[in-house]
Image 1 (cartoon, rainbow, N blue to C red):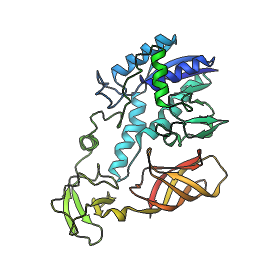
Image 2: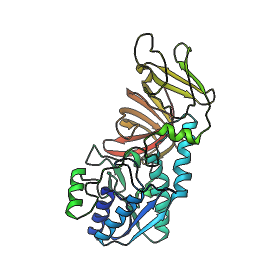
Image 3: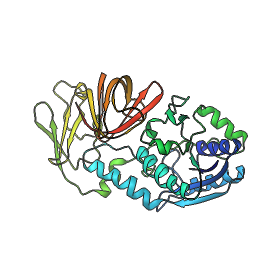
Length: 352
């Protein structure tokens, strides 16, 4: 096959490109320039998409003998990932930008362009497995990224290649070193790539008009304090609430709900975070419509799993959880698994 290898400048994408070449594919490397003003250097393991990352990707392509290009995706990334991220927080929801980047950029904009240019597939360094078009969890449970790929359609999966799905991270780093790739020990990027400082609230405050509101006790309705804006709060949050006195029982308070219209942030004890049912919209489904029992749902990239009974139609998905989950927020994705197989995903709209 003629394949396009998305090379971020990290160790995973470099080894994925190398394995695709070794498998006999005709490989071309491409680095996605996602920032209009990339930082000269990344800050350790924070962020990605810096000038340093672009140079590292090019050096790896040179070592592997691959043609290499840089595609400017900054405008598309801003419109499809950054701006919706800000808007979701302003609406009191909790988005997952990595998931949306995979959906809108790597497997929509990039894949569409690749197919138009005559490529057969896009290769990435994601830790996930594909067997006969079925997306499955990776062998390395600690690095599994099938959750953030759960939004991909069957057509997109048909043109995807994940060479690292059967490997562990330690094996990938050792292989990179053997191949002489300069990124063998490069730290993985963490946090949100377009917020390298890690200060999500500061990032949102710069982009949203301040709209003060009240912090309210969910049980009594008593006003406990004030905040400068709902953006930056998320369901399950404990720290940074700005309360000047403890709860009467001395236990910590958590964000239970966010009302962007009234600008109220409701807080209460941890047990009030328990969620036993999830409603979601915009399902992407790879099984027959209807109800499936004895499946597992996941609501966060790392953790947040519970056995469930799921009913899905063309417009909605509901999950009745057999065990409660905490900190489940509208805007997050719910991904449904049958053992290690991804059945589909949807965007959470409500919980109970």
